[in-house]
Amino acid sequence: MAGTNSSEIRIAGVGRLYVATADTKIPTTFSADPANDWATGWKDLGFTSGEGVTFSKKDKLEPVDVWQAVSPVHFVYSDRDLTLKFSLLQFNEATLPFFMGGGDVEAVTGATGVYKYDIADRPFADVRALGLEFTDVRSGDDAAVTYRFGIPRGQVTAADDIKLARKSAAQLGITFTAMASADGSSLASFVMKDASYATS
Image 1 (spheres, helix red, strand yellow):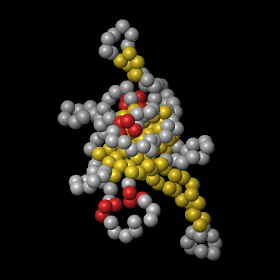
Image 2: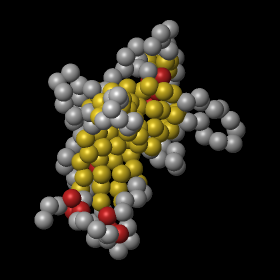
Image 3: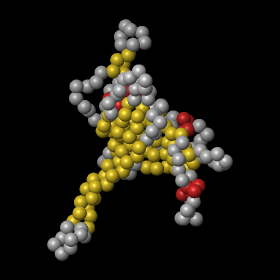
Image 4: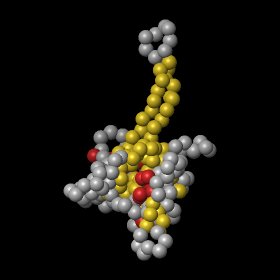
């Protein structure tokens, strides 16, 4: 609804990140157990740092200048940059290759419980789907508000330094950037379980 309404303020109290093969659709079913909703094709990336996820959308506009005016008379969209930035805290067969740019973790032949991950000598395209879910749970509310955000095609475009230290957990800092689909479908989508969007 229009106007001031404190019930429409959103706090991402609890959230999760998921990764899947490119073009996997985010679930639109909201059950009592979110893990069941994301079960088909999605891998839970586990714990993230307390800073959560930083969502960024930047559009670049080029001004059209004319002789007859000192201000632009029109703007042309030349670029759209849509990114999610976050830090993963778990190291496993899903998170390390995702951070490093693709590939697989393999068991070392003849050695029990020993695994190997090889970093390629040059970068390769590692296009994935990324899903985000967060829930705003408020005391006294009868129903939680849940948001989902999905990027069907994108890739890790920046990886932060990994700091290995005695007094802090190692983190896999990632910037994931959305890519356009060949068929012209949406760059990303929100799916909300939120009565605030109901039309009157």
